[in-house]
Length: 113
Image 1: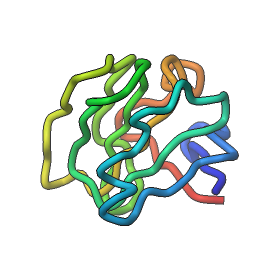
Image 2: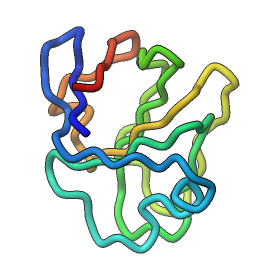
Image 3: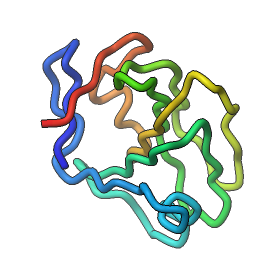
Image 4: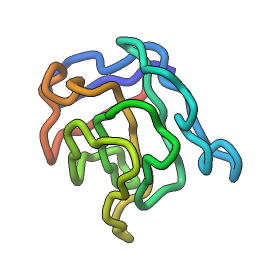
């Protein structure tokens, strides 16, 4: 799927995969060697994530049910856990540095294209 920051009119990714089953949410990006530019993983439903089993740092974006950005984690290293929030309905994982590159900020509205 394609994902865009509607607030800033910037494309975030053109190859965003969705993890929406128990297994795909549990394993996420574990074991992958990298995330290519324009790629990411949208985990839904999710109220927080872990990076156990990951081999690289990622940027993480917490989203509400309307895809509004609630929280950001820049360059989250392997073997970490984000906080959990009942307001968070999905989490977007991107390559490290993509939050800055795409100018994503708390409050931005994302949209699926």
